[in-house]
Image (tube, rainbow, N blue to C red; front, side, top):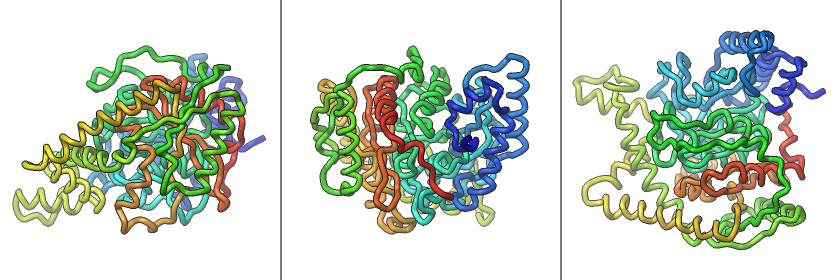
Length: 486
């Protein structure tokens, strides 16, 4: 029998319902796994061992009393360290919030607690979710479990690495420009960004409010559907939260439907690694062999994605992060000589280099005389990008693309070249700008043994169909069953 940490969350849920294992045994197995491997991977910023076991004990008692509240009851879930859990640290991997403890729960946290999930850890990220490699964390560099010299992707690198390394059955991350899908691709797990507005952002530390979405990481598509089901729901505290009927995502995976799948030609040009290209081509042929129709489509504004994103996202970030001034929120400098000095020194000491770079860029594009030239023009370009997707979806049910142009690169390889780093998200950013759902599923390995991800982009609020398409591919291959040797 496979080790507990090798099981899928769906399998663990089934084992719990049959009485084959207890929640405390599951939690203890994951804590043991963390003890054994997290010294190498460094996915976690922190976790409370005693509290996790107490939560697991409570879940076991509910089950013994016949009061289990659903498939997530007793299953461990670790969260990216930007999602609030009452009385747990909430740091955004930044020295600005190094000692902050959340006084309240995020909406997704409330939902998971109601369903009995064991919320047990805080996962590392690029500081304030700004980065593509988790090298920008203020605390530590998370390593890719498949090659510890390489990055796990970002900004949700800790969330992806924890699942890939078997340190949690599934985790939550946040995705502003690909921060779930890109690390999922580089770590060989499933990562999904929901449609903007489907999951409440209440209790998520804001990076760029019009782009941020919380989403699941998991070993399999079925597990991702299971966790998505647990975090979807209207929230009146988030004005962008949509009140819409929620389908049964897990049940929708089982279908014989044949789809028309679009392949955007602009995603297969210069900069795409040949081994990634070969894996994506093989995945497309796999869909064809299953009887699905493949059509070429065009997204002519693809090349606009990076410049538009790096105007809009820093602009929103500069506004959102203005609250961390040493007075209202965050680190307060002990070297300040007067009130004005508190603002300057607190922000200089609290923020890292990448966050400062984006604050400066955002303040510039919003400044007098440049707003119309940059910010307003970028907003208009965003509308054109969304219209491109709408036109493509008139010809197909979903889009197939690479998730990342390359497999995981070595740590330090791109730290002195921010533009090269920004291009790591070139295939995922457009999805956030258009507000669409996307999921990355493993579709192969390089000759050096590094995972490659296939991105499936769905129509707005059609997560059920998108996940079914991903599940259909996953059933034909064993990529998701492989684990790194640690």
